[in-house]
Amino acid sequence: MHKDFDSWNNQKKSIHSDGENKFYHSREMWWCSLGVNVGFEQDGTGEENQRPVLILKGFNKNVCLIVPLTTSHKKNIYNISVGVVDKKKAFAIISQIRLIDTKRLANKIGMLDKTQFETIKKAVKDLI
Image (cartoon, rainbow, N blue to C red; front, side):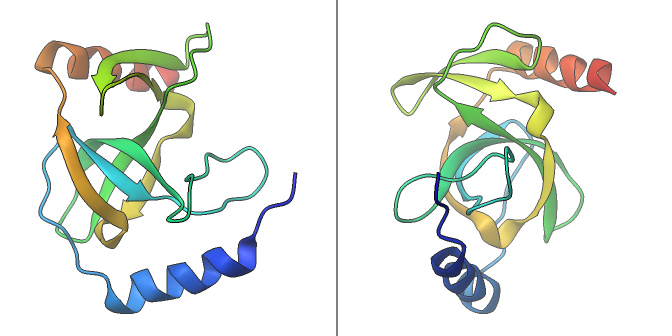
């Protein structure tokens, strides 16, 4: 599969220079510019190279820890249901947690239920 790293690199430069750090909270779900990544790292999709993410923890106004979300259901311990997100059944891919700059956050989608959030946090802790 061909990945368009050059186009993403131009987008990334724009996000870096023109993007604004967003105000966010843990448990929120956002569309996020994850981009085009190496190998099996989770990519964004569409022209904007975005995908929904769940904010696990904020460290400051510039960076936060996120887990990408997917609509693909895989029966393994690394995909945990988060219910319906943006009108589609979604799953957190806890094996793909990562730190991002908040300039990558595009649009807030909503807030995850507290109980489900605690389930995901526990699964992330158990992963390590």
